[in-house]
Length: 132
Image (cartoon, rainbow, N blue to C red):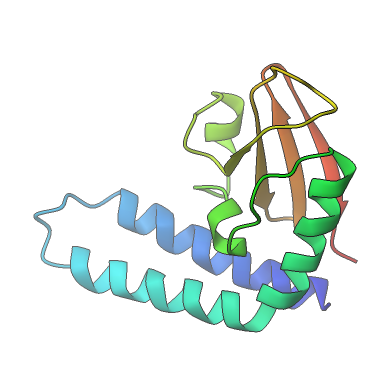
């Protein structure tokens, strides 16, 4: 997997998400920006989906989670700055359960710079995979 190209794709999606989130639903540009975002996400899943699904399967195995593995775009953060992660926003990534951490709420999040999968626990985050 080309880590640089993967990172550029993640950054493009996150920038488009931020652009969309800055608009009001009534903004005339909203639908066009949303369509552009969906196109970027579709291209991302087509380009990296199989490889990232393998990565996510390994990550789920590391934390002993039997949760369903979703499309890679479901795991993407909402922004490049990670503020949502710092604020423990519940919308980031995908909720998972783990036999390694019974009763602990956690999420898996795909972030950029460098591309990596984070395990977000209530008071900490752990890197479970980094693109090379």
